Length: 78
Image 1 (tube, rainbow, N blue to C red):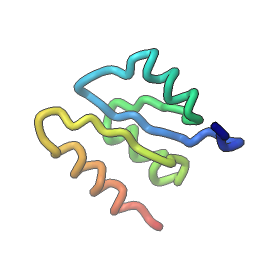
Image 2 (image 1 turned 180 degrees about the vertical axis):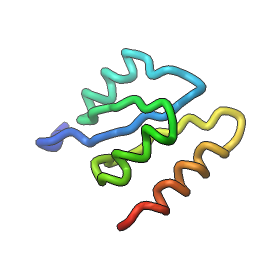
Image 3 (image 1 turned 90 degrees about the horizontal axis):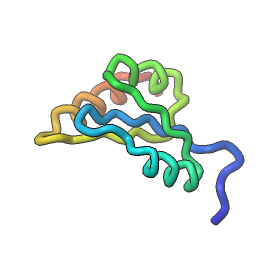
Image 4 (image 1 turned 30 degrees about the horizontal axis):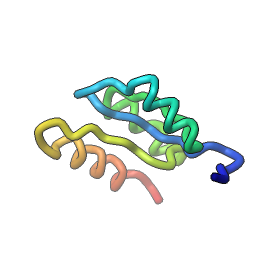
């Protein structure tokens, strides 16, 4: 499988479970650089800077966190 020259920048926000080392290794093998963020505030800076290619959001029992992340992304300048 061909990987991009620069890995995709993935932000991991999951307050319900930690990213397991074997999962991080698998994502790295797929060409992703995973950065763990613990709060919406930590997520905001790379999204506003345009340095994130994708965001992984842990949902827990509802979609409140997903809606908050979407609102944050929608509020960023294009």
